[in-house]
Image 1 (cartoon, rainbow, N blue to C red):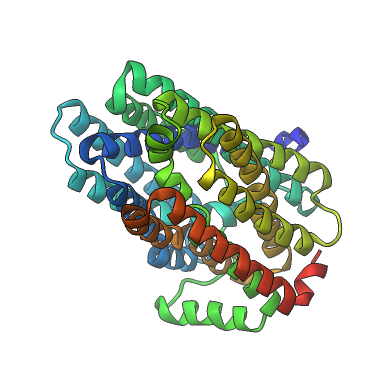
Image 2 (tube, one colour):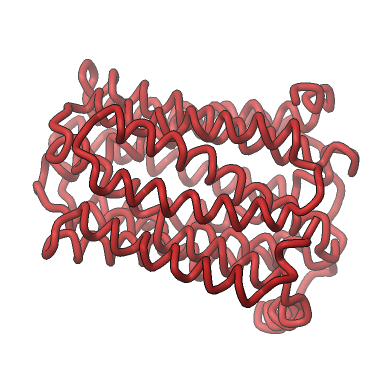
Length: 398
């Protein structure tokens, strides 16, 4: 698995992104804890989750068009630099005790725009950094670094919240962007294969027209969207589960997210060992089903160890399913369409989670957070079973 790091350009990007993601996870948890302290509202927790990811629904598609035609490295430098400045601003306002929940929402929304533009450029650049035979391992390693950061970041956030507060977490996140910006300065990649577009609409239409001819890939996107809408919102409500359901402090929140990160790291390791086998589509369907099943257990658990075990399964299954989809898309997509298709993947994976977070927050305020998460996951599991029954060709995708 580590052998793919022998490619210097991939190693630079991987390391910089790893350190940056640790900071991002620290900010995500500290931000949720701050909102809970400011408002004590489950709905506003969901609203902040909505604000941070909602821009993906629009701006990721635009970013995909740009990634097919523009300098992806410079595009990433611009978006990462913007997120760094927003993290510094959030840290300063919190340190001065000037922060309000409205300002958290606005800053989260602006950072979400930058992240949405960044995602397709990052995913499109990876195949340029490694030979085709190493692509599966490179994707697994990207999942590993993302999920190692999901393990390390929340644990550091739990400790940092106790000793330096939310402002300190936001400041450390801002510093973490320097590692990725330095890696991008050193990175040398070729020009994208496409020609500069005359506008955005025609390239976008071409991308959607291409996806209509690929029913198999469109079905994979639908499964990812289900995970995004029905499963990922648990992250927005995790501070509430840690404090009010399991009666733990910020350290407990770190343990919960660390359990998911540990499971995800396990999933990335398994994917690197066995990820290039046949019937990847079967792995996707089973992984998605396991995500929803484990989150239903988590929603009704009142025992810390059972909750940790459930989130560990969520982590393993999330990487297994979503990374397998990523692998299938990278292998089967036309290179001229890669940026646009990967922007659709980013939209499916990140863009529907804000809608789910908003629903979970609103429903949680009425029927309770556990019932809201359970309702979403039962719906997601039922939809997955229908897709598995109707789209039989997905089982054989390799």
